[in-house]
Amino acid sequence: MRAKVAKEAAALLYYRSASEYKQAKKKAAQSLGVRALPSNLEVALELDRLTDEIEGLSRKELTLRLRKEALHVMSLLEPFRPRLVGSVWRGTARKGSDIDILVFSRSPKPVLAVLQREYKGLRSKWCKKADGGKANRYFHIYVTLPSNDEVEIVVRSPEDINKKVRCEIYGDAVTGLSILSLKEVLESQPLKKFIPTKNHN
Image 1 (cartoon, rainbow, N blue to C red):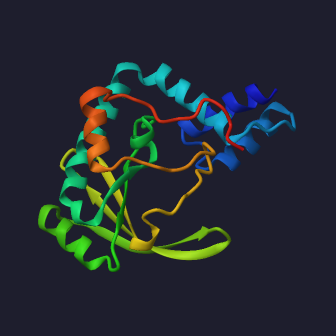
Image 2 (cartoon, rainbow, N blue to C red):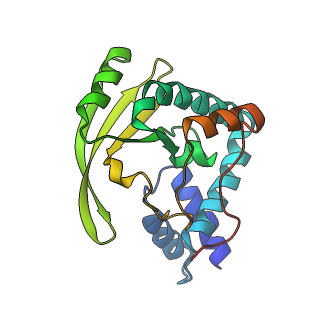
């Protein structure tokens, strides 16, 4: 039953009938009339399989394009030690996915200044996020690329560079890719996936 709920939850997420894993699992279990809830990892692996099935070759093309675009943006932001995270790092991007990049700076102003020289119509805002039971504020910058792909850049404190963050979906550490490691991936295994095969809980 867990597998059935995972498949149903994955479909809800893919077709954007649910935006969060918790919500998708509850809706799926309710529609199937069961109480068994799969882990987030089980749903994520099912979602990855479903996306491959539906998007096929176009998904590979998307992953490659987004990773190349990420490298360009990260190269602009090199002084801020950027790291590619999210679905483009994982290799699980799907139609509508954006590029997630972390940068490290004591102030968002120099980051904005670099991006404003390259892109127009930037959007930005402060967002709250619970980290280890504590609410922190992070500055988010949103960029629309000429391809119409979206980039979300989160500015964090330099003290956070080596901070270990556990992924709520996959249960592993969010390591991401630096500029150098992203270049290596693009040269040797451009479609490589960075996802665990079993639960880390």
